[in-house]
Image (cartoon, rainbow, N blue to C red):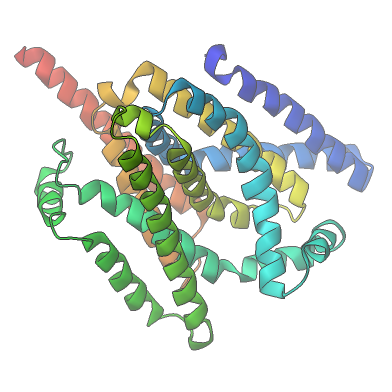
Length: 345
């Protein structure tokens, strides 16, 4: 276990120490130090619980990448995940929404964290619309695949696989859902919702298109090599961003300190990456055949939740429990299937 989680545990120790230092620096009390350490711990657990299904999907993509890009996913990827998606990206959102400069956004985060949190939380409609559209495309592509021959829930997945013969059907489904949800969104936020959702759709098409172009350009190479480059790396990073939206915004319910949030979610992100590498090396997705499909059900559920969050408040614990339920049931079904085959054999 130390082989896979040693770096994550080391980062946890450093992160807790930094969190405690921030708490002590802000309050000058042991109580403030302990509270900061506690919040960092809770945020780390929250990130792992919300992103466990992300680790399974990451493993399915990472299994097709070569050793070089796997290493880059751990090194470059964790830097992008912590500093890019959990520090820089929220700052960019605040700067765009409030029509202020990035420098002013940083000033708000440091000197006026409550104002910063209010602006970021107020952008939940656009954030949820973007993430919902992107994740919806990710989930539907898995189920609307005509070449998919491993089904967990046969009566549902077989017709969906056949439906995948219709050209670009998943785009039509996502656009239909976006239109239906937009009818329920407040009139003053409807345009924001539609634009953000369309951008999420375009972002998925762009990343998927780059991957296809790279495969076409590498016909003389193996498919593994074709998918082991920059396109797959970008896909994983955008996917991580979509999963992290809920955690970043939900974290402000615990603290408004940008750095405490980044440390806590960063620890969780590192554990998710370590878990991803372990799933690939151990061949877990091959051994437990329905685990990947369960993760994609969780992704579709998260996409629906993100759309619904534009209409109502849904606690992060509900999101985490739904994802954990799909993963748990798919794992249990895989174990049963393996035992049944062993008995028949």
